[in-house]
Image 1 (cartoon, helix red, strand yellow):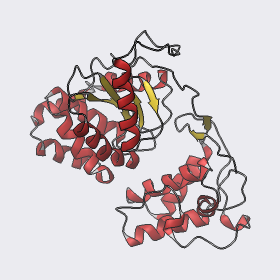
Image 2 (tube, helix red, strand yellow):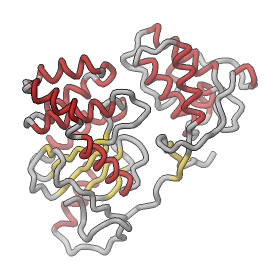
Image 3 (tube, rainbow, N blue to C red):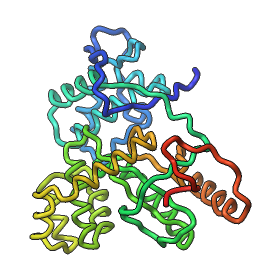
Image 4 (tube, helix red, strand yellow):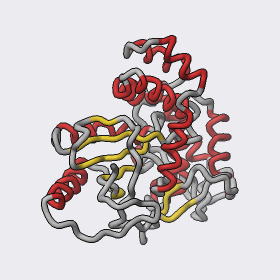
Length: 316
């Protein structure tokens, strides 16, 4: 079966078909093994939560036209992006402590607003992404810049952090990591977490707060954000004032706008020297970084320019 290179465009409010009860379809027996729900992370869920997640996936049908449930579609057609998004939506809702009926409702809402978009055909395109006011980890003058558009409540963003840490340790003088905010509206505390991280940034403790948030991504809520702010040593009076005043809202929105200009469709989305990276494994990062370092020592090859790009190989 050819791979359908489609990914969710979660933020566009275009109506799609609602998920239907599984009883309306004839996809065979329900899936009983979580390992068969491909590309979905169930780690951190209790046995009871896993049972709820699997039940909802078996009760609701994928609306890709396969006539199977979400669980069956994940098992039998790993190229289906709809079933992947729906399964991950279920797991996110269960992680947040939602009841089974609430999880089912959230899934129906996701199906009603789900839009698929083609993966940007931008091989060789260099995006000039403004990082002049963004948090940076690593040497500011490093020849290779990794720009990460991320969401603190996204489990896949959280899972990427270990790989990024390995990359920075492997290339301590050659690579810098730049963080750009891209909170998704499917995560209720993502924007609040983004604002909290920027309030910490204003006090020189962005990465401490960043690490706390990602280490506890499934437990993010207002009370915990305040607790972690204290834990990393923030001036709480200044922190609360920044949050209450909306002081950093413009910066979050600027990052989201920058992401839209670079055709960011979900999280995490990563660029190395302005080029989109699809494979986010350590070996893939290593390969691309070595290519960039080699290119920096050679005469530059011509590259396609994105419409919104300024001249240059990567982020300023």
